[in-house]
Length: 66
Image (spheres, rainbow, N blue to C red):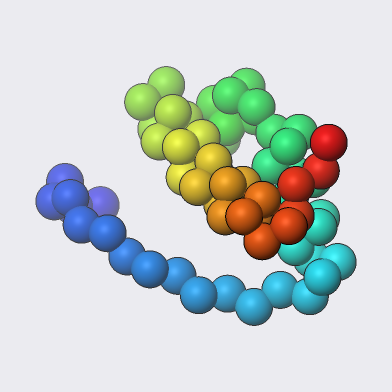
């Protein structure tokens, strides 16, 4: 992966159920889950930050489980 910083935009269409299920996943996943799938702590923190972007976007669209 390139070290160059750039941003991309991703557009994905979900069914209502898929959006809700994904929101539930992001509510439940934690650093330990990311870390177990990452090569090091730094990658795990980047994965967590990316997941938080999805969680916040889902919440903005009304998919915010309690």
